[in-house]
Length: 136
Image 1 (cartoon, rainbow, N blue to C red):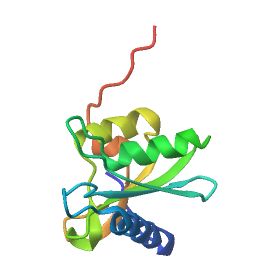
Image 2 (tube, helix red, strand yellow):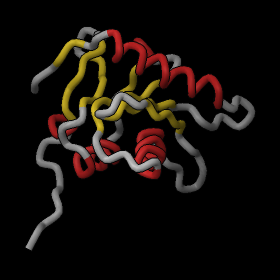
Image 3 (cartoon, one colour):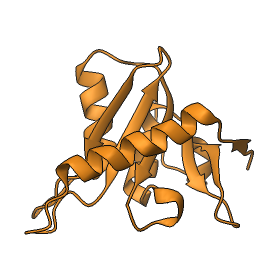
Image 4 (cartoon, rainbow, N blue to C red):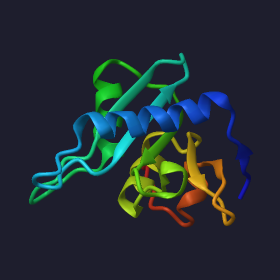
């Protein structure tokens, strides 16, 4: 799996994800526990939080939906964050990995490496043997 070092813009993306979480964390019912920030190819950043409930949605899904609804189709880097995670970074769940693979397999995803350092990997490398649509 290829990895790339995080640059200053990537570290700012992590901060954007943590900031949207701080702005929306609801301690009373423990909702909105994950923040997400997505940088598009044009440099525009979209942010979102997870929505808990009987059928909750992850922050990555919400954020991707916000960007797509705004007309974006080219995505560069995404990160999910939680205030208590190392460097604030949490890896996407399996469902989000599949979604990222289907929408933008070459998007950079910020995760922590084995030493706890934030690095970028491509979504397609996070889900080996991913399901892909069959085109007839």
